[in-house]
Image (cartoon, rainbow over all chains, first blue to last red; front, side, top):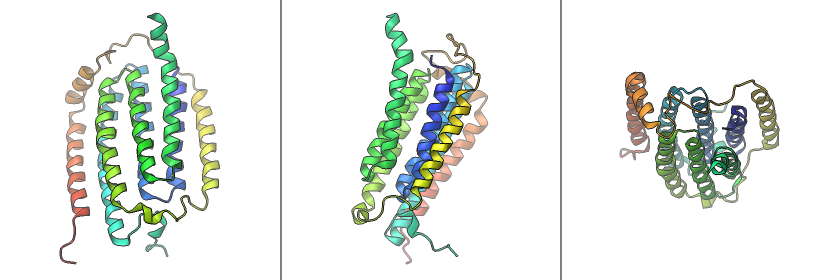
Length: 100
Length: 175
């Protein structure tokens, strides 16, 4: 098995790519995909520690994270469709009505 | 056979990790949103491979079913539903993208150096609680006894998400 510090570095790289996607893209759908990437990075950590500590609770927790991610995507895409129906755009900086 | 097992446990996982980082960058930096979705599909399949190499084959199967089977199709559906070709001439990135890239690189260096220098022990070669080569039984046992209350709460959460998605996208008849 590879050392767990390598897995941690890999997962922080994946998480940072997700953060980068949320920060720099203007398309709301790409931002949602980047959120999924961040959740996957967390799952990789959970499963790697589950293997290294020989404890199955990490895998169970990863199932719950996937459950929350799936419902989050369903709601997020529903909001994206509703926004597109109202404003004919999903560029995130076109929605600035609440800005003072 | 020994060489193959050494290869599988060591080099294959590094190859999968590197490939998945490349495809994850493809999600963020591709111009066309459909290409982003395809990159995400490859990323999810490769991450399922990582799970498989950590003796979590049930989680790998769930990852393939939920992400590659469900969420990717949902994303592709919405990307094709909204007319992105009208937005092609717009800017792709935010104004302060360079600052964000520098900050994220800083985050990678700081957190990566911290995690890399942590004195974690080596992996146990023999695992007992998660049964290597068949962890589905152990996961199910834990999920249905120790974690039964979070399991029920997760089912309620999925129901709320289902109803919420329907209500949010329902066409309003009165308007």
